[in-house]
Length: 105
Image (cartoon, rainbow, N blue to C red; front, side, top):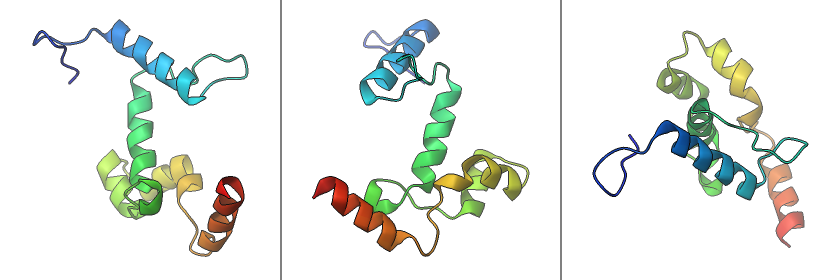
């Protein structure tokens, strides 16, 4: 899954070290400044977030049922309980656009 330049694979400790470093550089940290995510499960959460995020924000904007199926959750309630806060509401795009304009503009 993570090949190196020599045709082998990158060791798990090296992957975790890179993940921690990326989290810190991206500002995804705990209150004490350490990486918030320190394990391979973070990649699953990233995939779920990317699947849910709006297309205009670089995501796939998939509906909850498709995300549920891709993550292998037994039921939709698990998907929505875990990731429901990430799904844009049908009526909030104007609010999000206005907030984005305030940040960028």
